[in-house]
Amino acid sequence: MTQILIVEDEGIIAADIEQFLKKRGYSVVGIASTGEKALELVALHQPDLILMDVVLKGDMNGISTVQRIREHYDIPIVWLTAYSD
Image (cartoon, rainbow, N blue to C red; front, side):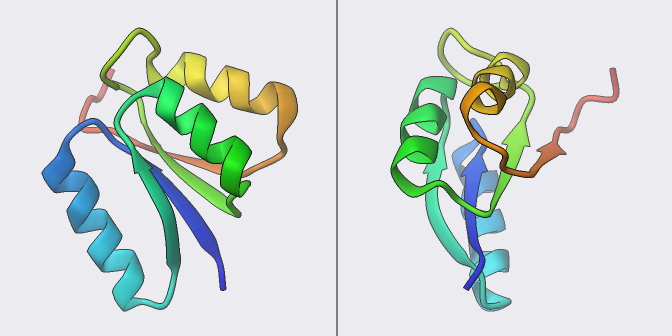
């Protein structure tokens, strides 16, 4: 089963994405609202795919989080954002 990590700072959006994925047979290994938590979950689960928001809570945004992930892992990342810039 494909394991997916959701990195999204808006809890209701993250929960909606999680429900959507689970109904389609995917395994959601976790939800992170900060870059720091995302890094922890990536190290712990090494998911098959990461759905990443650009704007996150905490000190790291999605872009800096992805840079850190890519230093150590070769995991596909799909950007999710409401911002057009």
